[in-house]
Length: 122
Image (cartoon, rainbow, N blue to C red):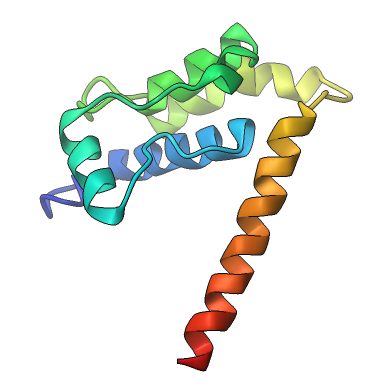
């Protein structure tokens, strides 16, 4: 929607899906160069890696429901707050996170800092 400059609040829900995917798996839903990613967003379904399969069924459903290309079929903000995975989080005292996901997130954060520092020196 943003790519076509015609969007509503549902575009924010897509963004939430992208961020949730990244936080839960440590990997982006669309990979490649900037132009590859833009093309994939327009024409392909998100890439759900093996790490995604390790998530609970409810977590997978939450992310998949946000990464629906058609905004009319995508989870709304109100519906997202009522999703069983979000509601269930209120009850959870602790969660286990796969060590490989933590490693990916740390690596991404370090790479981002390095890229920022490199770009600021140019």
